[in-house]
Image (cartoon, rainbow, N blue to C red; front, side):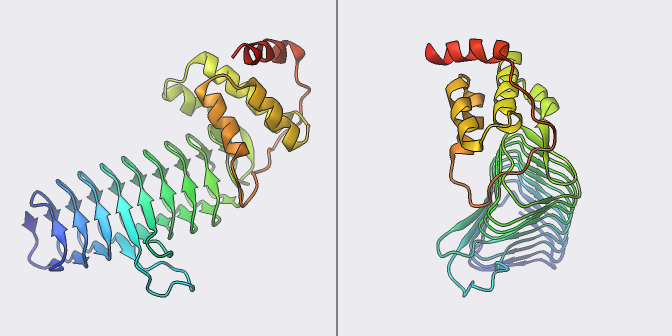
Length: 278
């Protein structure tokens, strides 16, 4: 293990011998750090924090500090970082505020400069936070989602997988998977580029387009549109899209920006036939 002489490692910490610890880094408490991790200058890792293998943590990042929650009173809680994460300069990630709960970052996440992950958040795999993105407490972010620069996300909001959040926006309600939002935090359509880059088949993309129109653009009540979408969903992605709307929400759903459109019977009829034959 290569440890700079100015670094501090707490006696209770367990650091894999393959790690590299930079100058003035502080590992304070029963921290666990896996193989081949690199900690830059003045990184601070605190408390019951576990960092998996092959992570790169850049200068002045702070991980595992107390939650910024006035109700927190020193309860035992945790912070866990997955494998292959890149955590850039001055990122802050706080441990959970609830006793025995965990703030969790999945594998392969990329957290850019000055982004913040508050207490009790859960980021699934391959999430990207662009510089200045701020996540309030208890936010859940699905896999492969991208939170653009200087975005603020309200507590208890859910961001679906492969969602793309427009920069310099405030997100106060849930964002469905596979969708995009604008700078006002309103849904503007599907994340077509993201779907293509992930190799989603044309048939699956077409079904998502239809389900999106049913739920977001049909003009029906939300309850009826979700019921109809559930009947039409055949693919795994389609069912995931509908499941997101059927799951419990504390914040409601982001508004769709655009005109309602009359659903074409030529689109719905074959999908209805498929759903009957499932």
